[in-house]
Amino acid sequence: MEHYFRHEYGRLVAILSRRVGLPHLEAVEDAVQGALLAALTAWAASGIPADPSAWLYRVAHNELLGVLRKGQGQQRILDGAADQGADGGEDPISPAFAGEVRDELLRMLFVCCDDKIPQESRLVLALKTLCGFSTGEIAFRLFTTEANVYKRLARARERLRQGEIETQTPPLESLRSRLPSVHAVIYLLFNEGYLSTHAEHAIRAELCEEAIRLGTLLATHPVGAAPPTFALLALMHLHAARLASRQDATGGLLLLEEQDRSRWDAEHLREGASWLSRAGQGDELTRFHAEAGIAAEHCFAPSFADTRWDEIAELYAMLERIDPSPIHTLNRAVAVAQGRGPQAGLAVLDGVVPPAWLDGHYLWGAVLADLHRRAGNAATAERHRDQALTAAPSTAVRQLLQRRLAKPGH
Amino acid sequence: MSKQKYLVLARNQPSGGQGSRPSPEQMQQMYGAYKAWMEKFKDDILDKGDKLKSNGRLVTASGVADGPFVEAKEVVGGYMIVSAENYDRAVELVRACPAVHAPGALLEIREMAGAKM
Image 1 (cartoon, rainbow over the protein chains, first blue to last red):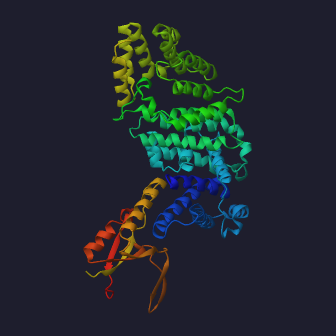
Image 2 (tube, each protein chain N blue to C red):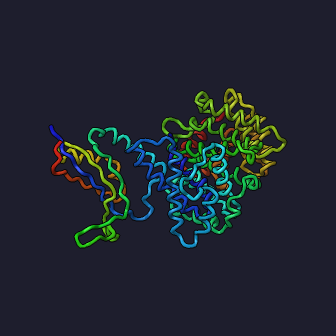
Image 3 (tube, helix red, strand yellow):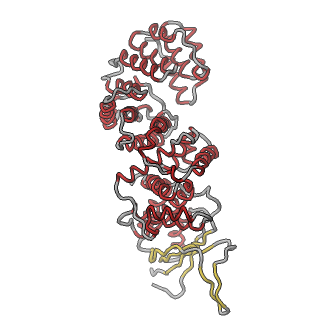
């Protein structure tokens, strides 16, 4: 029953927008909202009906048809919708098979990843329609304003209104080319939770769980059942396993070496390992494969000291080849320094000129400060430390840096 | 102590805008609150009542009109019947109802005249 209303919202929006067409998405969302509101009092007063999902579907469906009937010039669409799904609209049948519901949810996910929808609108649209968050809740989770969320949603809806009805509800298989974009949105959703500096653990875990839920739906359908999806799922599970242990009792961030490994979630670790083995089936290597491999090295190392740093450095090198970014080089330098000493780590960064966004990022300063301090270059370390502290995005990160960078060298 | 019957009328002010609409997660919390409230006062909620649809008929000796009037500031949107020893207890019961916190909610309690229990 946890998140039942929110997940029913996603289910109903996906099914009903398929029936009446995506240009009516807003009317669909209003009808679903109305049905949930009706359920709220009716169920509390008279008990939960035998099939609550069918009850909600019927109420939302009838309300939606009522609203569309009032609309001018909608008759043709309405007739089409009635023919397609509702048999005259009398007693609509709710899709009952789990597979059918999964397909509708996936279709909506692919719709959110239409390349004509601006990138920053895709995540917001998915959070709103599939995950059932309100604009206020999305703004709170993404650290932005409600007006900004609303603007992004409006752009996405505008695009959906312009589309032709026939191309708005295509067979899932024909959407396969959008798979990389779907992966990107799921990973973005996960990272919004995982990398968030939200003080409340529940808020972060919730976004991670939503990403895993959508990823799992994707992996169990032929359209998405491919090694990159499996690798993405492995990656998310292996990160999620460590989510709770990243913070101490007071909400302060903990370094990997400070984490209590016995608190890592065994179920997530098992799932992660299982998806990772399936990810290795093909010969395609994606960034998710490399990242999942790195996460697995950390997760299954017996201790911080016994981590296979050479393997990790190797995987970061692979990541650099697949998805070149100086941030991967920086991470490789850390792994190399861990395995072969600070000088070797600094050598990796020799000649790397960070782009402006990375130069001003706390990670760049923090890694350099740490490596130089351990290499005995006190003055250079001091300079980078100041830079990192100035750039720290939150108090929790600043406290972590102060603790980490003040430690005596070892 | 004997109890009296009270009619509770939800005189809701028409909702203003969509900004105040609860999210699905909030609705789920409200659902939990409703259930807890009904369980707590189950002996005193004699009739859970119902919501009322928004249009009706106004009947007088001179004729029938559609109503309630759309320009009305508040509309009776629902009712229920509860029992309580006195107004204080009835107010206590109604104030504990989650519906009180809905935007624009106004609940009127009226003792029913001839209905001693």
